[in-house]
Image (cartoon, helix red, strand yellow):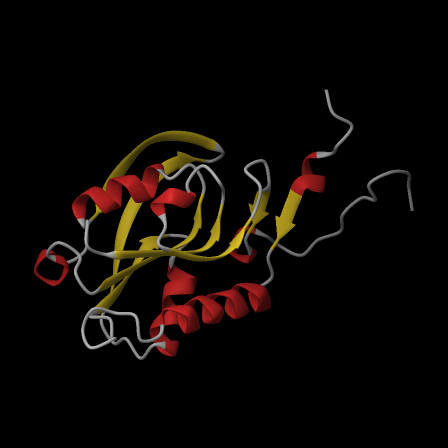
Length: 167
């Protein structure tokens, strides 16, 4: 048993922080695409990859944007990863020149499924945990496996009771 409260191992990401980290990821990938250094398209893994992919598409001047919808979580429980919506097949091919973006790689199961479909794509996440890190080609920040990342699209501003004691 631990004395740690659930939110004490949390990593809270603000909109400003996800924007800065997504831009940093774009800068790291600038000139690294397979088409004269450019990328043919960016594909966001929905839902978490949408904000980073949008920012990266702007920074890298990528006009072709698509999504792949993968369900691997049901609230906080992991389930078998399955594709709910695939990107345009003519665009994707084997993934050559395609930048696939997600917010986080956790266990790596989602990226493993997508990588099997598009083995030549470049996989980038803003954040990475050790168990899934091998599935990512490029990321910005690594966090421990037991850290829970709170993304801004999952949060609302509200009063929070102090950790210990009362006001």
